[in-house]
Length: 372
Ligand SMILES: *[C@@H]1O[C@H](CO)[C@@H](O)[C@H](O)[C@H]1NC(C)=O
Ligand SMILES: *[C@@H]1O[C@H](CO)[C@@H](O)[C@H](O)[C@H]1NC(C)=O
Ligand SMILES: *[C@@H]1O[C@H](CO)[C@@H](O)[C@H](O)[C@H]1NC(C)=O
Ligand SMILES: *[C@@H]1O[C@H](CO)[C@@H](O)[C@H](O)[C@H]1NC(C)=O
Picture 1 (spheres, rainbow, N blue to C red):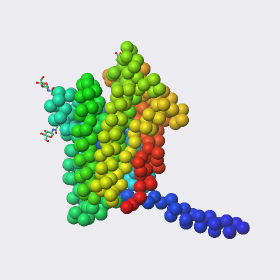
Picture 2 (tube, rainbow, N blue to C red):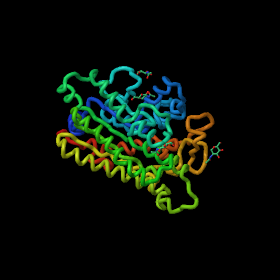
Picture 3 (tube, rainbow, N blue to C red):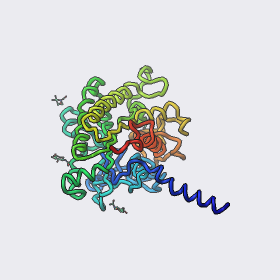
Picture 4 (cartoon, rainbow, N blue to C red):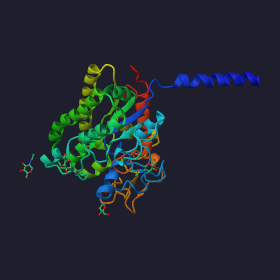
């Protein structure tokens, strides 16, 4: 009897991996973006150019790494969860030039914009982050520079990148923040959205042309729910500025949705032009809005209040930021959506990444994407 059970058990054990192995296993992950994706690039620049950052200090990193991990969160980011899912090492920041990048590289930099620094200069828009050459086109140039160490011939590169997972975004959030903080009119901001989306699309095209077959394209979050913007644009007089169901600022969420709809149109065109590739629209908007509308479903409380901060209605104050001395984090970050007023907690990133891998927040889900 015991013997029989053992046979059945080992039979199941044998079958199990075959049945659950995802149709995709990737040899590497390459990602582009901003602080929602950066795993240390900004901190490399900060050391080199001697400007201060706060993400290299606790409580940043306290949840998973138990030390500052140069990520803008208490723990892992979405790219970290993707790497774990596919059995790949957590992505190294490209600028650290530390070790091999054969299993992937992260080009994302906190503060990075989609548009070039010169665009902001020409439009008299002062950027909240110090202007560095980290915009999407620079990140793509770094990818080009890295390429010869990964593959040599065009064919070899196509084969290699065909087995890579590319993540292009989230990017664009900082372009909009810079415009909002400089008090551009919503009409003006809206007029720049297509330029921002075109720039993202041209990066996706260059990757597809080099043989990328799986590209994840995250949209924008509902920016009107971000504590930093909620406090900066706080309005006692204009109650109608707020969505009464969420307490978020309506006009910023409308613009996020507009950006996302333009991005989705680009993706639909790529699907026609590159039928052998899988281009995944990763929805950032819906999951974050769900956290805000139905926090109890996810174990969250006060979804518009940051975990790490020095008080105030949204626990965000630009003069006393998370990572500065005397600024502390809430006791349990997993009960918060927002970490430091701008970025999400590991708990929130985990929910989003699961929704991208298995659905319902990705079209198609990353795990369901069939190798074509
Ligand atoms: C380089 O990589 C090693 C091993 O992953 C790590 O211990 C070290 O901190 C890294 N150094 C830098 C400068 O990132
Ligand atoms: C930017 O500011 C300069 C100097 O104040 C002005 O001449 C120029 O017209 C402005 N440009 C835009 C696009 O507003
Ligand atoms: C950024 O790049 C431009 C050329 O593209 C260069 O002139 C400028 O010095 C660079 N700035 C920094 C801060 O590296
Ligand atoms: C932010 O902190 C400063 C310094 O502690 C304080 O003077 C200011 O009132 C705070 N602002 C808000 C909106 O709480």
